[in-house]
Image (cartoon, rainbow, N blue to C red; front, side, top):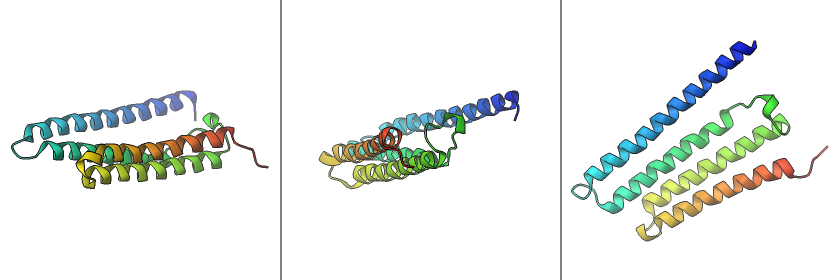
Length: 143
């Protein structure tokens, strides 16, 4: 692949990612506006809080599901490609489960505990990902 074609491919990927991110941001903003307009006539403030948290959890799940599917150029990989892909799979699974836990806690936990429990579940999955990445980069090398 020529340098110009590679630059165009990278630019195209950036534009697609940027466009997708802007659409997600617009979805969050519009959902927030719509939910606030429904309060308190149609939906209680507690349910607005729960639904918005659930939406954020679903977005975490959607983005985490994409992590293992994104291929990194071999020139940017700091470890073996197999180890890099295994790390991406672990991150994807961990964050998908954390996002599902976040969404479930937001919807079903008692309202007094919902935010704390949801954040604790997502933070735990994120901590596992960080520890796995540190272990993969700085851990012992196998022959």
